[in-house]
Length: 201
Image (cartoon, rainbow, N blue to C red; front, side):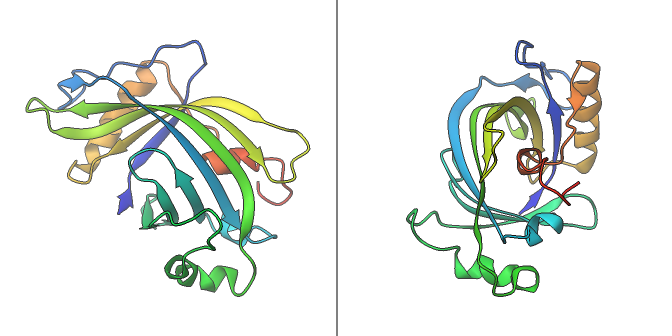
């Protein structure tokens, strides 16, 4: 699966923007709430993170499981998934093989835990077909071994459905900026959680 999304920051007291009537979006549906708990894995020297690769095990929501995200030349990411399994099980072998050129035989251990209370708004066309999803995430993150404790923030993501045209992302992004959203300062929740780690600028 190709992940095509935009990320924005939003103050805690600001309302979610309305994107009804933007391009082919006829209606912004009602939100669906979910609670996502994710544990992120990497080597001790952050070989995956340095290569812009993300490996996590996440519970909650419609896509609970293991997720491996790999950067693409076009700026998007490929996402590979595996079933959730039990909490004590190691990283699935199929995912480990996909990153062996980066991790080698180094141990993959938890580097951060991130909890998101998510409100998902479907963006629908005139026939109620989904074009994209706007998610409003209220995030709490803690890096493993981090003395600074918890970090909390709010993040808006807009992700296209697989059948939607690439130009729709530009249209929705422009409308979101006009609505007062600011592009996220960090490329991912994990990178913000690890922002104080040396060498990960």
